[in-house]
Length: 447
Image (cartoon, rainbow, N blue to C red; front, side, top):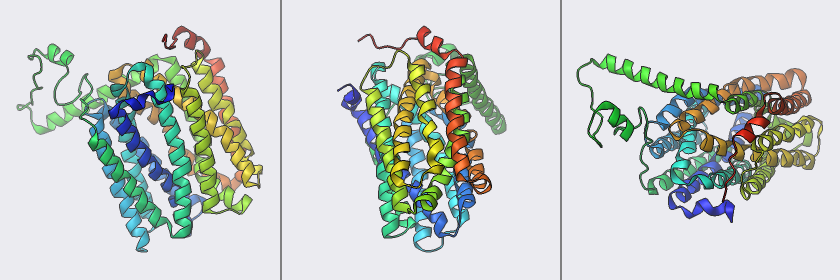
């Protein structure tokens, strides 16, 4: 089966398994954090504060994460990120079960987890093409698209809802920490993956860099001993900024890249904040549900996303890949506008089925485009710029969602979220000429 071909490769199989386990923990976190804030007496504004700090940690570190992913072993970057996330969630869980947890602990912990994820995601995105042939990247992104929603929106939240209902959110946080430990084990079981070749990549220079420097082939880059330490740090900072700028110039030169990122900015500003902050309260106030019902909704979203990812990855990349991606993202989010009017759990679930499947189609195609149309030596930086530009408004969205829900009501916020995202997706596709671009740059697999 085409969608399962990447699992034939041992290193990718281990990478994918570790990702799957840690994503279950991420799903636990979604439920645990929402109900922990409620148990501490908080409401939408307090939950906005915690989720905003997570987003700030993510956005503030993601550009540096991309540079690091293009310099050193991406596997090692992921290992370090998992250790940080594990320590943070373990600390919060211990504080919660001992009754010492306060709201500011959650905010600081969320910032640390977001910062670690800023290093993990670009490294993962750029590592996959090092492990697989190009014609299996769509299937690999499809496998990620299957496991991510099943874990983050299905298995993780369902387990989190049961743990919170049976005990308390602190226990769910401790289980989350255990998933990061398991992920570290899978990464350690992988064979060492060399650092990417290119300017500033790794301790040992790649062949092109060695040739340009005049060193013998295979020679290690010399460690400067003459300049003072401050000068070395200054040069290192200039190098990091220069490499960030190179990635930014590439993004600016590619219309398909910057225009899709423009759509992502709009979608995140209007959509993610309401879904992350207001959906738990919509479940509680409109349907009378609690943590289990909220977890069930996330599970429904996850299953539908997995099915959408499996469907798109079981076939060759669509010839009209930009159209498939932006129509899926645009029209697929329109049903979100109805969330505020619904008082039945099954109706909310139906909305999330449509949205989840369509979102997965767009995500799988987008990940494949980054790995196939972006040069290998730039993939870490472009992935981080993707996150930075598209998530730059995430803290704003999180911070505004709670106050907006209290000011104009949950119904109005969800209407604006669904309509604005749909309009922006279709606008980018038809106004900025991306339908012509996809025909000028075919990526069909001849086999």
